[in-house]
Length: 277
View 1: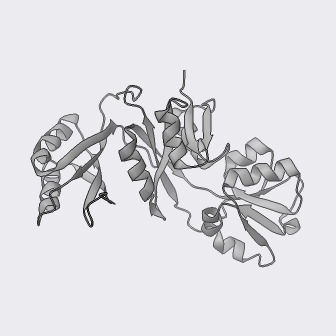
View 2: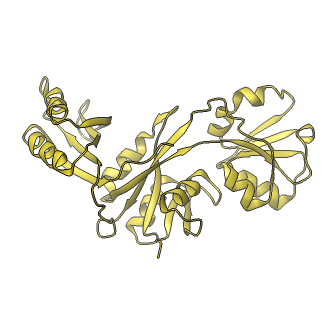
View 3: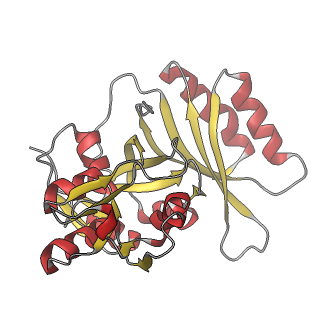
């Protein structure tokens, strides 16, 4: 039985698409949350068995507050998935592009489609809190002349027609999502090849470089290194690192090698690397 999965956003959002992709099921039950903090609290408090949480985008970069949320939550990373972000213009059945005077969506989605939208200078752009919610409101209010920018799932769930597909400017736009759960529910995977961890060093000259050299010497790919401010220590940082390896023994060797060089070393999860295709 699939766990209820907390997502940021509303039904039909890209987080729900990511949840369906990771769990390979359209039947996965989602727990919509308004904020990422609520997503984490839903899992910590037992309202959801797992969560899918965006952590970085290939265009916009890292979602820095989510790294801090993850570190403080006590949750464990059990997997990841990458989603190709495709934005579509959608409206009530029977509407045509020529009928549209107003377009609703999340500010980021409108920005991602700026080139297309700018070609329709008479359209009024309305910022909302969610792409899928914009689509849902159009359906519920039966508003003609109004379109939403959202993903395919929103059009399917709310019975809207896609007037123009793939209107986003950057065609290779991907978001990486982490799948997290409480430690007792984070299932171990056979032959993992990726790990996420946090550490900080003593802030002496070359301390971070020594850690990175040890990792590289063991044939491990450091696919992500993200600095996060360390509370109470001005200009001192925690580091979130994602390590890719061929054999689990490489990870164990790396942890043993860097432990004497780090402070507060914590493994957040060991899992299978996500597919970007």
